[in-house]
Length: 224
Image (cartoon, rainbow, N blue to C red):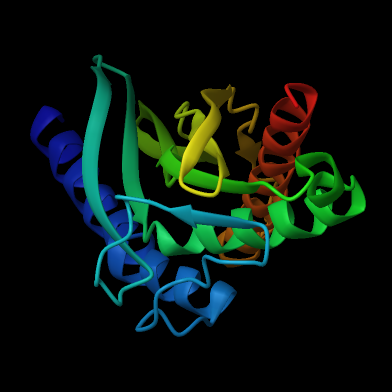
């Protein structure tokens, strides 16, 4: 029985890895964003600019790895977490940040508050990773019965933006803004498509980056 049980688990893990592996998730990310990542983000306006050491020449929207954790191999019950860790190209959240920062800063009158000064930003940290976690369960009683719980889990990485306010070539103020990452896990409903769940999670992720950009504007504006 034990040999058959192990064989079943290995077959199950192989099946899951084929369905929810990094290549497929990378394709979903590509389709969700559909961006040309050969060009660098537009990083200047007439009163603020942004740089980031996180930007590279990588044209792939994402890359991923797989891990299996939290294995619980009991006599009649098995459980393990099959994890796909996806690292997003930093250009994706940075582009989202820039667009949200620009729109919100304009709406809040940040240019007028700067009173002719220029704002220089550096994005030092931004959430750019998520995990597709498939928690597999199996009960072995004569026959094997298996079920799983699929979820998308965010990174806990905060947004960290350092800034300088310039009057000509002189720095009149500098500081660092740290915005906590409040993104939450998304659990798929019964029979919900994992592909659609990925789109739903990435929409949620983008909205979280936009909210973090707005908080960065508020924090900077409050110090002027």
